[in-house]
Length: 119
Image 1 (spheres, rainbow, N blue to C red):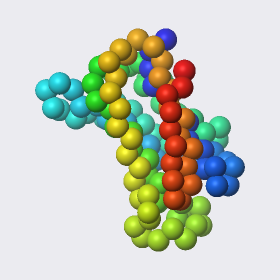
Image 2 (cartoon, rainbow, N blue to C red):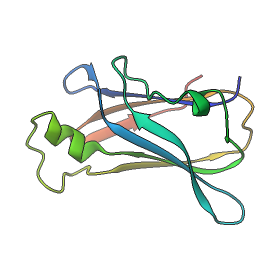
Image 3 (cartoon, rainbow, N blue to C red):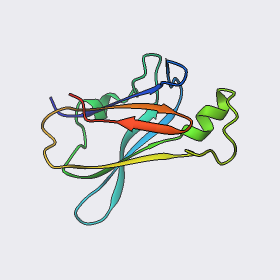
């Protein structure tokens, strides 16, 4: 099943990053950058974007996922400064075959991030 799903958890507190803004962009072969999805992290840690999750508009290309980490940590009451060490986390990857579903779990703290390709 095609599509991209994103899961974000704050491992410093052991909870989903509920409410964090996430955007997903694709840069095609012609160099144009377009937004393909995003939204807010839900109660279970998943970004709620049904069209992106089922593969709508997901083509081969260079993708960037942007997590608004600094604003989210400040809204959660953490003193991370302005700007935060990780004000915006940008993760770039290449998608060659848009056929298989791509799940990207992000585990983060105010000072670090880990992500991998899941299924």
